[in-house]
Image (tube, rainbow, N blue to C red; front, top):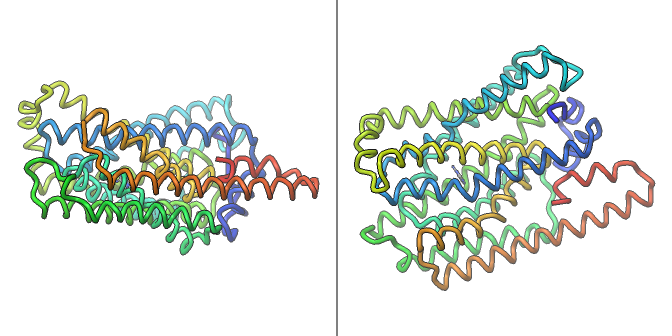
Length: 381
Ligand SMILES: Nc1ncnc2[nH]cnc12
């Protein structure tokens, strides 16, 4: 599975689909599909569980925003362990047939891109944690649905993502869905929170959506402009460097804000108990690592647009879980927003279904082998 690679000649193709298709020509399609499914599962786990775990920290007495942001990427040593294991597997020659003993695949160009994206991710984590600290999870999730609009915009600008009327319709509906919430906030404010704090949370979450909407196409651009073969091992290295630098960014925030000193006191006063406090922190780190690994893995297997779509598709699940587990209010405006989101997703998938069907018919006509390849592209999801 780790052999999957995008050859350097794939880099610089004009559309995401083209790049992904070229990438696929060198790989076993079923391995590629398995990797895409694995990354979708990781992304799904992180996307649904991460916000709930983060909110769990806040609603039982935690209030360190920088600590929460730090936990989003602090699981990076896990990736290091995976990379070390893969290195030994490669060296034994049981898994791959080439580049077996290379310890680090990443070249300086990709490293610097990963550092920049990592620092932006650190800032994004802080903005996101500011929102989760102030808003119900269901509200945060609905606002984050607007991220797809930003991803689409930046994917168009950075990687020349192509659009259909259906995907444009989806982006518009998801964005309007988030905007509907902005008009009716009074019933949603948690007890004891001022209007100003609520609005601050609201706009910082929009800023997080915009920034992460930029980060995903930047990852895709990095793959395209890497001037080296993109293997999944390299994707893991990029993930590790990004998370490392995001964590460094948030550690500085924690130091300035005295978070490290406050942690033991917060643990003592945490309403679920001290051990549970640390368990909640660890669960946060694990779930968010799944989120980020899944997100950039899907970019590798398909496109930043598909990654954005999966994030948006799963947001209603997070909302439902928050309403069930945290008894968050679910008033009319959230219902309207949810319906618009579901309509948006349906529109997007219908458009993808149509274009896949058309492409398949065309390929069949030409007797082209590439039919298999398209199946692992974003269109098939
Ligand atoms: N830091 C973040 N974590 C999870 N989802 C996000 N969406 C935008 N920013 C995010």
